[in-house]
Image 1: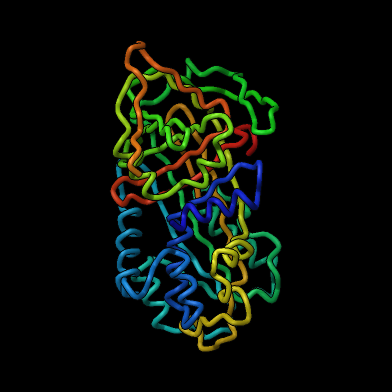
Image 2: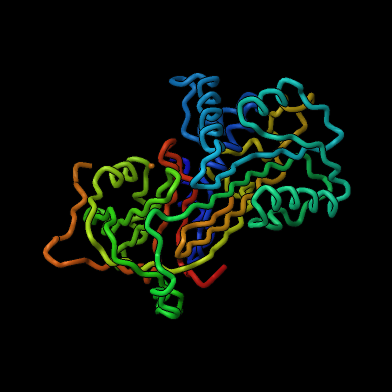
Length: 367
C-alpha cells in the first residue's frame, strides 16, 4: 500500500517527469526511524506504512523488517543487491544506547554523529558515504544542507543482475521513435528479441503486462497502458493487482521492443511524507526521545535518489477483482509488444515479494 500511495504522490509532484524510487528502501528506513519515535510520531510513521498496532504488535513489525533486510542482503552468486539505512545525527546530542543497539541488530543500520555547523564538510561526508555504498551510482544525494540540521535519514540500495534471456546487442536499433505524453517524439536505442515470455492483457485497466526474469530470484514487470489509460492504471496500482498479474500471466512467444535507457530521480521526502500522514516527525511536535535524551529533535531531511539502467545484459539500479488477465490469441506465430510510449516498470525480489524499484518511464532519453 505504501509503495503505491507514495508513487501517486510523486507523480503529482512531478507531472510529465520520470519517476523512480525504491519502496523497500524507503519503508525500511522509516520503520527503523520509528524505533526511536514515541507517541503520535511513532503512530503516524507506522500507520503510513500500513501497520495497525491493534492487530500487529510493534515487535512483530520490526522482526519482519529484520528478516526482510537479512534476506535482501544475503550474498547471491547471480546478482548484486545491497540495501542499507544510515542516520546522521547532530554531534551535540546524547544518543540512547538501546536505540543504537536495536537499529544495528534489527536493521543492520549505522548511526553517525555529525558536525552540521560545517555544512559543506558534513554534506561531503554524507554524499561520499552513499556514493561508496552504491558503487558510484548515486552521487550528491544531499544538497543544500543547513547548519541547524539535527538529523538526516538516508536510505540507499544497489541492484545489478542479468536477464535470464539477454537481448543481443547486434539486434538493438540505434534510433527508434518514442512518443512522449505531450505528443512529441524522441529517438532512443531500442532493444528487441523474440522469446517465450510471461505476458497478458489486463482488460479492466487497459494495459499489457510483460514479465522478464532476472538471474538471481528477481523479476521485472513492464506495464504498457493503452492510449489514454495511464492515469487509470496509476490509480489502480496495488499489491493485490501485482499478485494477480504474477498469477495470471501466461508464457507465450512474443516479439518485444524495450528501450535501452538510464534514468534517475531525486526526492526530498521531508516535503512529501507529511502529506501522507507523517507530520509530527518533521516539526516541533516530533518526539524522538527514544533516539536522544531530549524531545527537541526532529527529522531535517529524508533524501532519496534512485538510478536505473536497463540494457541488453540486464539491469543496474541504485537506490501490491474477479476479472481475469486475457492472453491474446496464439494463432499468430508471435505477437509484438513495443514499449515506445510511457510505461511503468516494477522490479521485485521474488523470495520476499518486495518491490525493489518502482518507476515510470516518461522520457527514456532524460537522465
